[in-house]
Image 1 (spheres, rainbow, N blue to C red):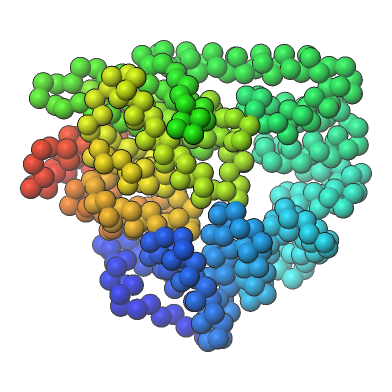
Image 2 (tube, rainbow, N blue to C red):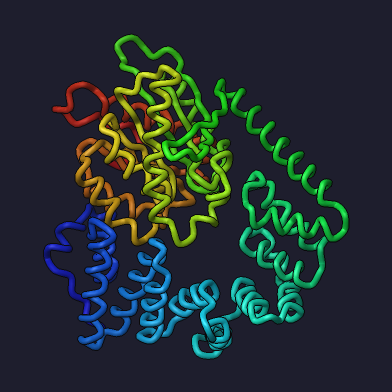
Length: 487
């Protein structure tokens, strides 16, 4: 029987009201409690060794898998593969197999692509897995990497429709099409990503030019990319103007171009101090998802900067053209984007004349990690809005530790469609922070992320009522609980 032992200290630290649950496993508790990546890796390695010695292969495999994730996000792929191999050997599951397969297909050392294909073949027999389009896609990609472009093309043809909505699969299918000199097919697959990355993805653009050269349409393809980019920019400008805002391109302190939307504040009521809000979108989100929240903040007298993280929207460049380019360097980019938040706040003060003595930072989904880190660097931060928090599993402990040190008032807004994954995270973060001043509030209408503010205007009103109470000069009294709040 698998041992299930959590010390009294763990239970006390993670204890929450009846609505919350303790972590299901020791490894999951370690992930939430670690206050830094280094501490997490040390704890997971020690637990994996002790669990293996105690004849608990499932516990050891879980810890080894989490350790692999942490190392992968730091760019330590060789070490990550060692951990994934160990996890698979200890507990051969579909999840552990796919984690290893993906790294083998990326590193492609001697014999590793063939090994990945063997593991994929074993999924249906050893693990009882029904092949999905993404599993079959991995098989096709492995065949291509072994020089079997025709076989890969045949396999991709059967599953092209469900894969075509994903950028990475479009890229892989385009590679196969180019190898087979199917240039029109390659161009069709590459064009959407050339537009999405604003022509800054040098790999995609180079492949597109190669396809265009083959049938004399290179200039026409370039003009089409420019046309579609301009068309999308026009729609974005129209939305910005409708909000009374303006689009900006700013320079981060390292020279990278950042895209943002500035929505100036309406005159605040007499006696209310100015406030700047910086809203960091989740990677891949469009500026339009923040329109309702930005408008509500503006009407409330709050100047708002909606920032696109690197790899998204206008925040693109050859070194970071898309969200996919974050892969294996997540840790470094998260730290850099946290500093981007500071850069745009300083720009607002120096270039736009905005009073930044009080700053509200808002994050959504995976950007919550970066916003909380930014708050540790920006002493003017007075409150946080964390919408449907979805940090990477191995980032939860350090983010929780930051909140514990900050002890800022935090408003957790959970969208109905994000309830299951986001609520347990919000509960753990709430317990670590300033509980008396913080709130966890759920939406009752369908929606995800920032889009929930569009369909339920009451959400913004509830948040702003809490914000006014939380930012009162005297914090001796508990802020009033807005109607409908869970706490």
